Length: 585
Image (cartoon, rainbow, N blue to C red; front, side, top):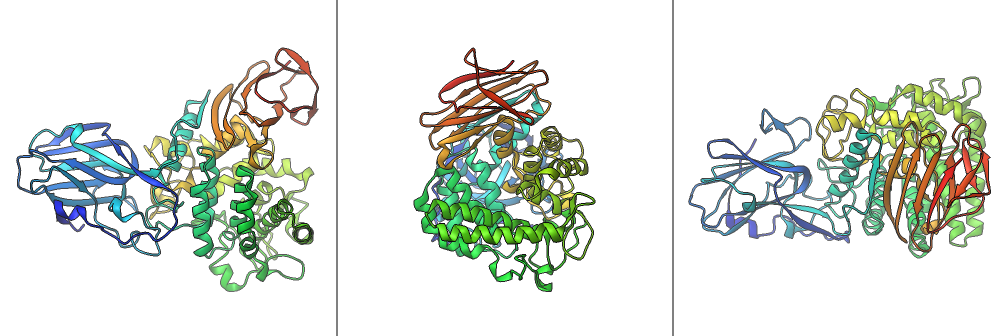
């Protein structure tokens, strides 16, 4: 490990070039330590409680030393000290500074050439070099180190409000998982666009879409989402399935904001993300040998693919295109482009027919990995289920099969796996996977002491992983969308869907920001199911309650209302608004 010797005067200069990009607004927040302890003569360990991207401010006024002070930044501890040789891409940095009479010093770690130069997404030069860290060792401090003498300058999105979203449930572990994932989204806004983590600090489409879903569960402001979208339109990446996720991002923005002006300005660019150049006569996406080797991703890292067999016609790649075509048709309708909407719908119908004929095995009720193989992996089935491609009468069987396979994919694929389970009657299984013992769940991250989600389930599954990867934070959006149970039903949240998926839990309460204001709700699942809901002005909601055994009617505000049973749900025939209490009887 190289050691760096810098005097205080160095920290007043720009340490890297300006960003030159239209990033969302980020700012530095000064944070006091959570704890300081003396661990050796002249050595202090400072704990900031959670990892954040930043650097330090040291107050050195009246410090009686002319020697160098060593500052060590770390994400990990080992034997009670900052780990100077952490695994993979877990961060450690060391710098020596000489106060030289300065009253206050900005102490930054040395720049990492890999993530502080193009093509990495750069942070403002005026901030100084940023690194993710929770712990700091200060060695050579001549007196006691007090909390008012050291501050972390942490970089965050300036629109984020910590308590704009909350989640509390009858499961303490689930609450810890939500807190970990929710904070992970805040902490990884440091670059002004969504990046993949600290190792590269690059924007990738899949990372960005998953982060967008969780960001909107915590902050209704679209600026950082749109800055990320614009960045990716200029600097796209190579994986086959990543391009269609730009359509997913635009669709999610439209559902969140209802803003057709922004959509219209980006619509033409979305047409380039449909993999049209790879379409065969049957409407399916085809892969060349080169794309099979380096393009078709399915999941990442490679060992997380559940033995996926890659062929010229890949089930997962085609599932992404089908989902993108469906959403493009809806976006075209929103912009009044009826002919283009019809074209996208026809392309989807043609490809959907071939997809079912060539890739679905009716004898097993499962999808093959591709044409030319009978192998049926987790991934060949989770993506079609999440995207609504599985025939309606087969969905429950596919969902049960997926639930029985367990978490046989990565933290990236888990977003889609759990969506499919929640949407198809397997909410108890989805929650059990989040909190499962072993090393393939968010419980494992919590119990390992993570304060930002990891890139992979464990170091052994990706030895070079970083510990600050927002694509691992799926529960930040899954828990409010499905367990609390609130999603936009029409663009801009004019009409919401309130549909809790309780699993085996007895109660949940929380709130979430929307473009129309705060939505708050709570529910209890005891002998009967009871839900209390407060909607912001200008929003109505379709209400669907999980039907309890023995329930025969639904009451609102102490009086019965018209409702009908649809499968596992009681559906109210009229939308509600304002503050209401709904109960099954």
